[in-house]
Image (tube, rainbow over all chains, first blue to last red):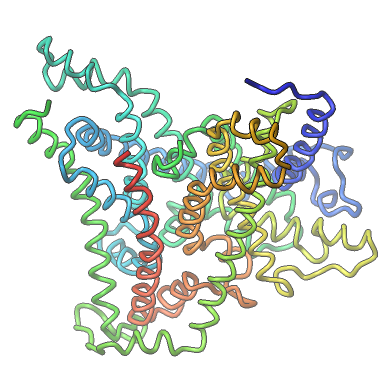
Amino acid sequence: MARAVTTQRKSINTLVAWVIALLIFFPILWTILTSFKTEAQAINDPPLFLFFDWTLENYAVVQERSDYMKFLWNSVIIAGGSTILGTIIAIPAAWSMAFVPSKRTKDILLWMLSTKMLPAVGVLYPIYLLFIQLGLLDTRVGLVIVLMLINLPIIVWMLYTYFKEIPGEILEAARMDGASLRDEILYVLTPMAIPGIASTILLNLILAWNEAFWTLNLTAANAAPLTAFIASYSSPEGLFFAKLSAASTMAIAPILILGWFSQKQLVRGLTFGAVK
Amino acid sequence: MATQHSRSAARFMMAPAVILLLGWMLVPLTMTLFFSFKKYLPLRGDSLANGLDWVGFDNYVRFVTSSSFWPSIYATLIIVGGVLIITVILGILLAILLDQPMWGQGVVRIFVIAPFFVMPTVSGLVWKNMFMDPVNGILAHLWRFFGAAPVEWLSQASMQSIILIVSWQWLPFATLILLTAIQSLDSEQLEAAEMDGAPVLKRFWYITLPHLSRAITIVILIQTIFLLSIFAEIFVTTAGAFGTKTLTYLIFQRVLESQNVGLGSAGGVYAIILANIVAIFLMRIVGKNLDA
């Protein structure tokens, strides 16, 4: 039974929570606001909140100076490609572990998880060397492969926990009715698994979009995604706060929106099903 | 019922993922181990084609005896420890707050979670410039407003600054997981305790906190694994200067900046061992959960 809550207590909760939430959100809000200012207004003392001349100039300058669209496109290809490729490889694996478990299933799952915990820096040079040898350095294909591999354990795990929740009796019934393995996967399992697959793809898009170790170390001019593009602002010339803000806003906006849809999946995906 | 037929089909379907991950783990790991026992300075003409000199454990000894080793361990521990303390404590408080009845709960949640979705290079640079810049940053404006001299955050208080930035990124993660755990707490238990006259702090200490203990452990373990390898936040802010050179950053510098591959690889092996110690504990918890 829920307790009756006094309006006064609810008001205090609301006030405190909003103040804290806005404080936490402030750096993002401030970045978005600054992106619409001129460079001079961006460093004005006292800081200008809402009453300044709103301008879209920075967005035009960022695009014009550094061909922002190219980096955006690289991010889309790398994050999208690695997620889709990873999902295609992970679905059969997760399916077989969830529905035809053997004694070793648990060991395989845990071992997959352990590969995720390998510190990237420990294998930086080997990967760097292999990339040079294979001509993959600064290519989108190379990054799609690496990001697919580092996220594959999470994709398998998430799909496994979702598939586990599909009752096995349904599959047995389908089999009794003479469904082949292919029919079973295509017509019985897939429709039930689509929400789980969608959430898995969503979370992994976010992780791949924000990955900033391999993307910084394995790209230069050609395949650099937004993470690396933004990093180029670490040694700027002249006034650049407004331009940095515009570039940042464009880089985080798509993923903020996707992220808000994936709150629930975030917990499951990042704790490997240990907290639901 | 699994038949013989479906078993072999299952093995076949698992194969691509298993083989890829096996290759991804074994090939670079073997190479790192191999390099760690070699003198390998590509800029001075060492190459795989000409053969590399075997130097035994020299690289391992030199890595730990170099003057940057202990400072890097110290920096790593302070950053990981600082971020863990801040995110877990604030995460618990925030999770309890967000669990209370209020107006606009959905929007509040969205605001609190948002920093997690900001890419590391953006959060590093936004904090470094727009907040911590000693002339034009918001914090400098704020300090001047109160008549204080602005702080040069990233040089004078470099560790605190990095901890602040990274905590801001990871607080949403801790909050979200702890909130999920709190929501599974049986509220009748709390109500019963309240009726029996247990004060708020006692209810928190004896009911809420024990209930959260597993989620807290998971937050600590998962964050530790990610925090041990933070890179971009340091790369775009201090680039390892002012005492913020972590073990990860030191290895990166050895391998790519000074191109001492043998030495860096030995460091890499240390980092792998360190991460594995943490990973073992995490795997135990996750493994137990699989049986349930």
